[in-house]
Image (cartoon, rainbow, N blue to C red; front, side, top):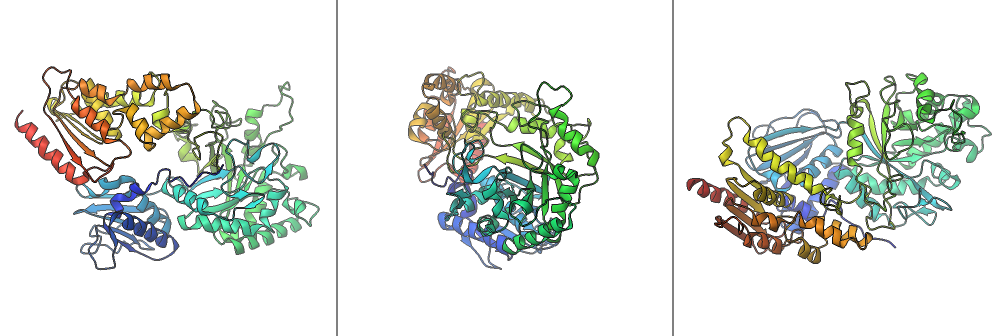
Length: 637
């Protein structure tokens, strides 16, 4: 089964704030053209326009190619000069209702656009803002475990639980690469700038991608290039032997060095922006330098030298151990194998060689400590490898949210001072994104969204924690200096609207409640009306966990916004878009109609509907109405 392209976190409606405005895109080059195309498509959907130089514009996206923004006082941006952002940083400034994004490089301009898309209408509201954004790590990469040919045991994607590959089908690159381009777009929107397109366990078929099948890699790279995603390739260390004609792969043999130099030159002829090689050596049957009495620094530096003239990088995986060891042999400790192999080599790796270390010392176990190798090699560039694929956490058939584990690892301080995330030069994740899966969470390596986490027990549900935090936030705000505890209101839109209603039902002495398009209202009916957003996550979960409906509905009843609304005491102002397919308007009306009915005297309340709007509701128009209403409430206090 093949799924249609899913927009994931970039549905058309996400671009509404950009698409309704007049936008100037200043700059040239492939990524500037991508930005221009994204804006033009959004304007075509929502009525805005791309404008030429000198015309009024509410959004300016400018590529300077250097340090000066070219938008000083009196210029189109009107926000003053920024410094040089490098290729990926950008400046975001707002003044007088106009937003200017300034970037020195194409990727920065693209990331700046997605930053505005992420903020939505909020990007254009409020007083002057001036921000600079820079990536914490220069390389953020996904390693795909995809086989070109379907492996008889492992399948198309390693371990078999991600279905088919996005890149490969029937033993060759896919003819239609539209989904690969859409995938690159999604990756760019969350800051991922590199992808390795094949399995680190390189079999004979995949070995040929380096030479006579490099054209297929070039086609994939061309699909990813418009979104600034560089293509990497897993290669076998024994390629000179496997592909011929050499009898050896000894990294210190001059013939081997010349072989790699020649092959790499031809790779860059086909893929000029090629990122580099990923190598698994002397591990789980993969060949490596140990066969020739050489070190892993010797092996990594061989490929690094071939890549250096083109600015490429070799990612040398530190996942090295004897997979045939006898578990009863106490003299062999797998957990420290990488440490023992690599720490003595610190400082011997080339500048364009990156040692790629799994976050734990074993193999992506459900729970394991941080690898002792991280922080032990200050003279070596280091990439931390996390696992987005659920190899040991349910193989994507079971719900498992991996984010907290990654956060715990990256915040850990091996020396008690510097966190792992700051010790690393790059962050890499093993990915199981595939063409289809045997479960409903297609292309979702992070597992389902928050609406389905802990769905079978009200004590475990994700929103229980959010509601608790929201209630505690009221107490925290009231304790701040200069805050009148009697004049604190709960305000929210969408998920925030549902949380504001929960706070209204649990905190009896709020000054006011302002709710727009509230989530978690009329939940049972919403599940019948829409598959969008959080409700779709719940439906997807229940489509796999057949028979769990009763437990799920019981949990959801504890989160029902209408129930909280009934308990509320504070004056309330509601907003709803009658064409909302994310939070159906019937839920907002149910909460409004029953608001305060258990409070004795029903509090003051009113609702504004926007017949021709969806989840965005009344946007800035509604905000002005809220502020006017709130002023009236305060006047009667």
